[in-house]
Length: 177
Ligand code: DAT
Image (cartoon, rainbow, N blue to C red; front, side, top):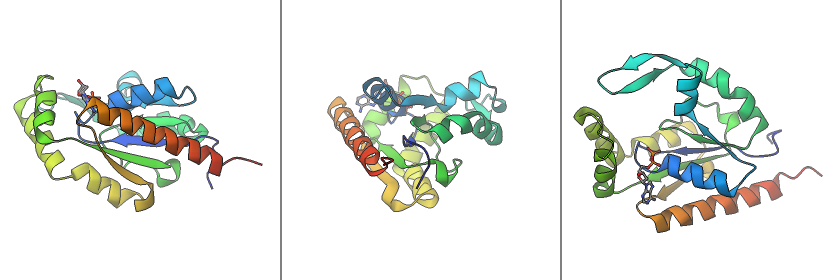
């Protein structure tokens, strides 16, 4: 049983699936949760080994990143927003949400970001190949993984409600007497 009084949730998925959008809505509706944007931590705390020009992204220093978020994760109540999930210690994590999107919507979302062609294509392929879902399955127990589709605002709403219901149940189950 974790000692934290609030759970830690990873919202993961290929870039463009809707991680940040989900985390923001969740954090707004659940004031006890904090949106932990790994992207932001990597930038603010310089948890990187430089900039990758081809991919237009930071090369993350995972050890430094984990050192920087450990205290928050020990306390609990983090919604971790990141396109990888295999780096976090299993003991930190209570729920892994893998967001999925159809190719057409995915393409539109990534095109509007002006990604370099190589990055755009890799992300589309990665989504089709279910890379993040597999990574989650390789890293966490099946019982804590949930795959949710994020093609529309209706689905976004349903997903957020579902995670809120899960949170309520987790708090019930982990109440200290
Ligand atoms: P990510 O953080 O996974 O890269 P995002 O939250 O930044 O993705 O979303 C990318 C874009 O897609 C953004 O313009 C918002 C939109 N979007 C995300 N989820 C959506 C959904 N379920 N329905 C409609 N649009 C969505």
